Image (tube, rainbow, N blue to C red; front, side, top):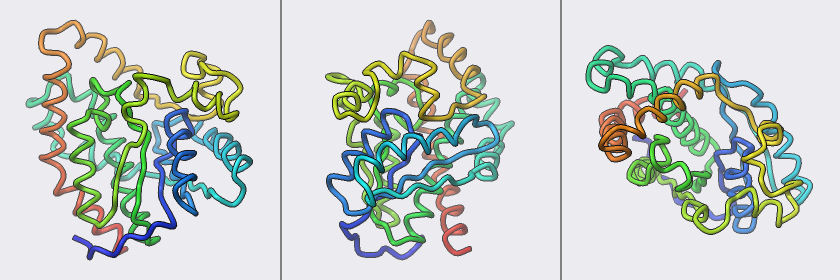
Length: 249
């Protein structure tokens, strides 16, 4: 494990897709920190990730000199995570392995976010995880999100998902509209505007079909949540080995 450093309050990293959730998270972070590093991740399955720059420009116009934006390739890490123990996982988790494309993708986000933080002496991190996707989206499941916070703490980084419960009262795209950061309130319901500000994943349709099937099965969503939590706990030591390797590279 990398040596823990003393946290500072002048900078924060935000996992930033450019979508409504991460944009609202970034806006909130800008009210708390002097510098906001927006980290956008991409791999070979992503399309239109450059659209996140449009969302960055909106934030930068609102608060000049507050934000900086980087797009980081995670393709190699994504493949390592997905294909690690592939056949064992296939027998253990069966069709749930389809959802592990999302698991590998999102875990790679956090691995590279920790690496970035350690390399740049940033000790606060925020993400746009929220209860809207908390049923089965791997890193937005509440119990998994708690484990993510523990992983960041191992490296002296304070992690939080500040809008996790806000969906229940007022969705992020509506709040951005009220702040003057979007042209309408229902961005998530408009495919054209949704893709204007962020990319999307070619693997998403398979995961969506899988989840629609599983919602009709007994035990949903608890069975999926428990399996993904077990998968995270079984892989976290490997995550840390990658982080330590990347930080020292």
